[in-house]
Image (cartoon, rainbow, N blue to C red; front, side, top):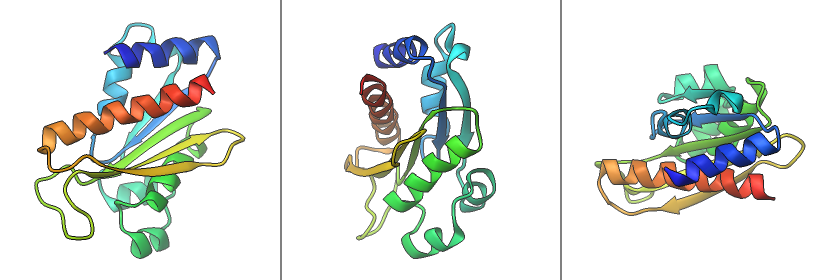
Length: 157
């Protein structure tokens, strides 16, 4: 995957360590990065926090935030990304939480994915992308690719 290689190259050239915090993708971003030889130079760790309990225990996501916004929200994605920084030696972290499908609701449809991006010394950013009901596998792949794009953009800034 070309974008993953670009992320690693830029991270290496800037001595940036990366952490991932993933829910609906179940570690796909970390896999995309660590499939490439030499990734250990910049991939610090990955968190797979599929349940709310895991988000709270491993990343320090607030139970109040989960109760107020639900797991699939920009607020939770931002706290996941910030938590990945706080619980690692990384200086850049991306987080993903979403509804890969099948299913969803009127308010949180299948294909809605929220992303968080945290960088040491900068405000944490979050955004939502509605990929649509592409099917579970395609939503997860699209979310992985979008997260890699967020990392690439942050490293280019």
